[in-house]
Length: 351
Image 1 (tube, rainbow, N blue to C red):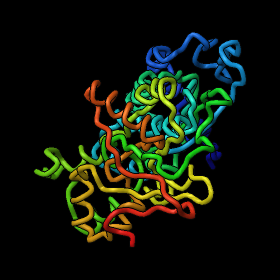
Image 2: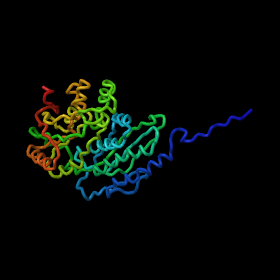
Image 3: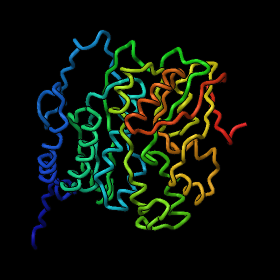
């Protein structure tokens, strides 16, 4: 009778390829190094990222941190097979948040979990992260790539990020002197950004049964291309304004839209009235039409074409509008601070 031989299993047999992981690290080393600020110490591959903060530049430095993911927008990347923009979404959701408190982004770390590690796909995703870090002036100093066979599907992944920035304590936002009569300015978004995609997918794919590669004349692109437009990065545009003008508050319009994000910076006894003085991008109008979505729901779910808001005095607002005009950048006067209970009224929606 032949003796049974127990099979010898390896990590690769369990679905985890260590060699592919090492190859992926080598593939991304140079693009990661391209993001390094002078304060970065060491190299990629250590147990932690090192950043030597120059405290001599600040009187009372305050570190501001933020973390976020991309959410179900990832499903659009899976459907299109395009992965070079999703990294910007991960960076933008973090750096734009800490920017809203007046902070300059310093460094960023990413977490990428995959079903099967494909070095070329990893390089594509991380290149998007690195490009966005460079554009935001922060360094990608580390991260984690986890191959989780049997947990994620082979061709799927999740990505999240964490960033740290710095601001002088006296320049921290929002300011306490926000007052009735202050102006709200709106800076355009690049599209849907990274919020509301569960509703987007419900409308486009479950309800309308649209194909991801369907050409949409109103968008002058395929549906997939429009939905994958990466979140706009605001640091390089906003940081110089913080040095030059007296900005009292910044509002990053993310999940919760206008109704949930504007109140986050308002002192007690104040509210904001929004006047729809900008052109709503076609993607939002189409989603509202396709899904028969209530207008209030639209402004609670999406950014509606405004990704960042500034709150400041009328005098300072006039100066910034002129500054943007001279640079050929779009900015809109979209509202004012009024008496209220930290609530938001939108023209044509709220009584």
